[in-house]
Length: 383
Image 1: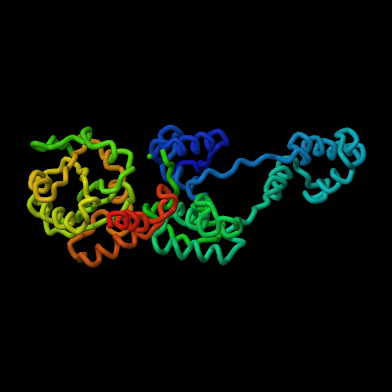
Image 2: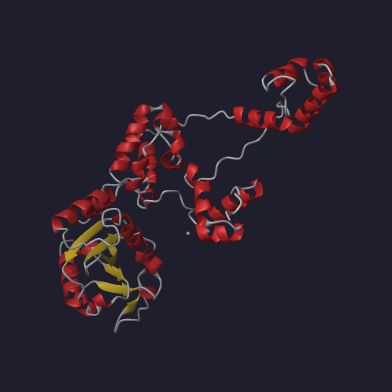
């Protein structure tokens, strides 16, 4: 026997709770358990607006309310005239007349149906700035295709056109134009150029390693490195791929300048040799310290220090945020090297090209200057 059909929907209270929990960072399955629905139902409810809570609507104080429409309906059944109903309600007779006519006349007027139609007709979708300005839209799309983030694009436009509001757009407008496809402004495929290729926008709020022998704790790192005031302090890590492939990633804390190095394996001798080679490419003034995780790839860290005169400071276990610049950069690099892909086929020349592309992107933390600009200033100051 077939189960009776039950429509799956959301009350206003359920929808409000859904969006509130999503904003707090709860996942689809967590929200589904609370509301007693499937996670696919939750996703379907959020997908039309791309995971962005729609603006709450308010009825105009001048519009007829449902209670007034019910009074009109009763008046029609009682055979009252339009003027009599208008006088009793304190409304203009023309308002009552138009209301009855646009909803099928006196014989077909129903208060609930009329109220739903009026609520739907009251929608006045406003075109966003990207929909109105083709030149601005093309500029945003071009930068997205170059893997710039919406925040970088917004900052770049503001830096480029400080006095012209019409030539600027907020990062939130760009995100909404990407995820809310009903706007018909930016192609959905451009989402693939974001750091995280999600079908809906998520909230901002969503191995055990021991200490290496003779290592120096990050707690002993000089204050000049902690506050980023002085250039020359670096953070490093290995970005891992499939088939035991990996690359070295290095980020300068002051300028966020990135260097990448190809290595055939993660043995300590291989990694230390590559780090020494990278260190010798720079003036001594621009390589004063290196902060690293507690991975065994740097078990021979003392040889690096002896050959370069650069101290390595190791993070606490389970504390990736202590290498925040490097962690952020590794996230950016996942646009080029998605998880699960083999990194071995990439040549050093390709890695250099990708590093150059990252270094030429404007950063909010640098007041929308690029890491390449800041690092060039540091190099010039050493001469």
